[in-house]
Amino acid sequence: MTFVGNHAFLARVVKTVGGELGLRDRNIYCDWPIYRVTWGGIWQAVRLREFLYRDATVWLERKRIVFDQIPSKRGSSQYIGVYRPAGRHRWVARIFADGKTRHIASCHSEEEAALAYDAAARAYYGNSAMQNFPAQGSTTLARGAL
Image (cartoon, rainbow, N blue to C red; front, top):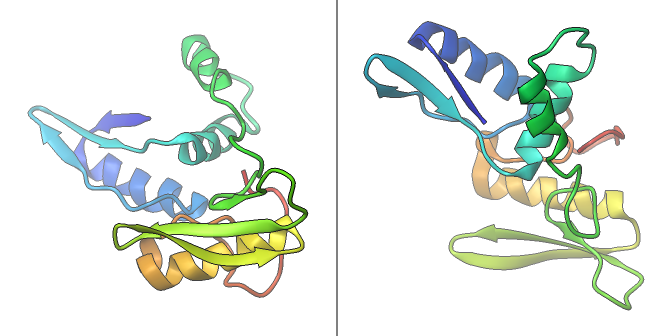
């Protein structure tokens, strides 16, 4: 998803929307005279859709149609970096870091695996990490991660 506008507006969008939703930090690019900032990927698009249209009563119909075509999740889990291998009764957390896919944990619950992923994401990527539970450290669970 791309936002366009002047530099001051986009800096505010990156700070406000990106910070509240836990989206990766983005650079603002200048294609003179237009400035733009872009987020991509299913998880970020779903979080943006929910943020923009959660309580909306008015919207641009063609944009809403595009957002509605984005799947709400992919794979076997609703969380980033978590999956359940076929025929297994445990959830696995993994992360791509330093050019490799790394196994983090094998857990009994999907939420435990998501928390393990969040801890590893913070360790590898710091504040710019995509997290399942961005508003919290790693202490309590809050449902509703997309």
